[in-house]
Amino acid sequence: MSFAKLTVSTLAIAAVASVAGAQSRDNVQIAGSSTVLPYASIVAEAFGENFDFPTPVVESGGSSTGLRRFCEGVGETTIDIANSSRSIRENEIATCAENGVTDIMQVRFGYDGIVFASDIDGASFAFTPSDWYNALAAELPVDGAMVANPNTNWSEVNADLPDQQIAAFIPGTRHGTREVFEENVIRQGCEDTGAQQAMLDMGMDEDAVDEACVVIRADGVSVDIDGDYTETLARITANPEGLGVFGLSFYENNTDRLQVATMNGIAPNTDTIATGEYPVSRPLYFYVKVAHLDVIPGLPEFIEFFVSDAIAGPFGPLAAYGLVSDPELAATQAMVANRETMN
Picture 1 (cartoon, helix red, strand yellow):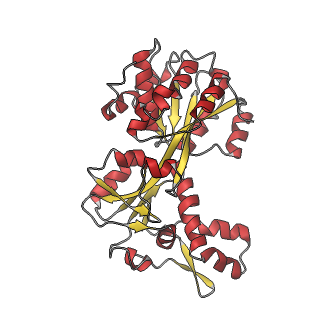
Picture 2: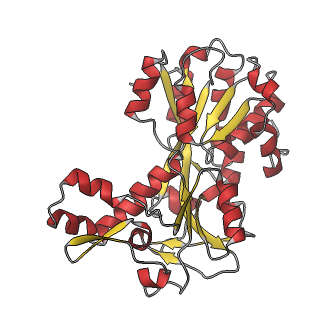
Picture 3: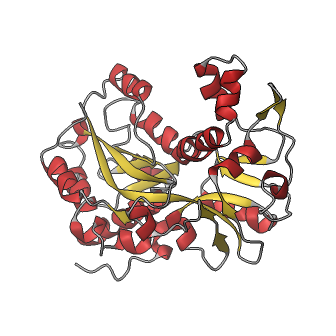
């Protein structure tokens, strides 16, 4: 099996489909995470070239959008797979069940890092979670009261950072990357700065503190990006002082335009993510509608192909694009072969 044609330029072939193609049910239909999109597109293209099935249709839209579509019901008018850069939530599982989607296969196929990148010719940054919390929190505790975040310059957040206006382009709330960003960076920063304890000392209850820690300012300093990473890159191109939140693989395929920041002194790469040394990483998933496995042509073959050593292993095309291979891939392969569903 040859993967010589699997270049970044082929992604659009699988990711962009005509309306007529999307309506056909002789192929697999997939939607969801913009982080998972390039990986799924690589697999879809290779599958179409190497199997006697049509190339699967892969759409983006964000993890939440993909899971919402996945949970709409069972049948040929609904998608077969939802890509996600976060695990499915309990309320989404409940919605699925209400609509008859009761048997779901959760497939973890690898890991990715969340990186903080800026224009290749701009200033360099060395961040901590505290820096991002102090830059983007809507309110900060000051002298026993919550006040609107006054920081507008990175040097106001941390004197060691460049004297540069804060202009952050972060994933919108429908993206799974946003949830990981909030939990692993903003909430961690809230704790590290002492803000979490300060709010508790002010008499706020724990639920209120948990919520307040991750509320992002809405005064224009931080901008939600509802599109994919190409939109974030376009914003940085338009504003070279901007900082964007990306998946590692996207950054690694745009190093001619972006430079990456360290987090807690650690540079993100496949090695530091694989070892857990880099603090902002997450597993990547796709969810399969088990009821479709014996109905949609090629679906069982596609998911087995996706998690094969040749594709998702450390020397496959996904790793070449930037995926950190899952050390427990063999267990995932067995789960897929046995059609094991979520408990």
